[in-house]
Length: 194
Image: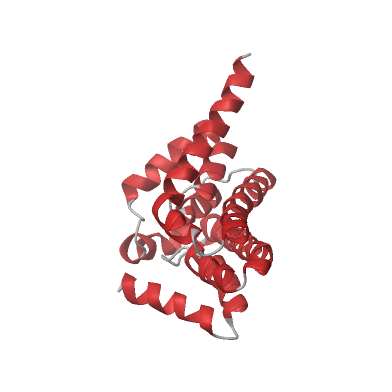
């Protein structure tokens, strides 16, 4: 089923509705859809490398607004929707959700930032932020910064290197985002201790 969804997402790149589909995919992925928007972003950017940054902006906006929906779901609807999410959304388990609660209690901004930038399912953290009533401006700031960094990194690589970078992105994007996030968080922790 996931493979069919993946193929369905990719097919939008060859239609005139690629950009609206990119926005809607980014929006949906931040609160309930299982396929990340990077897939369509890469396909569109490869087709029109000069518009890569525009596609990244559309993806970032859709993702942040979808994250706000996730926050609202967590804040107002979670009591009614929890069973549905645990039953039907891949990556949602009660044990994972308890871990998210502990992370929010300790790290707040950094939890949202790391989830927004890395391959961790962002939707768990957007909904969790609402459930655990994380400071909304802080949540929004972390979402804007992390999601934009992620999507503009992909767009920048494609804009500068074109088609040859696709294999590299497919193979190493997850690793690169983890390394960058760890270096960034480690740098801030080092500054804090100094």
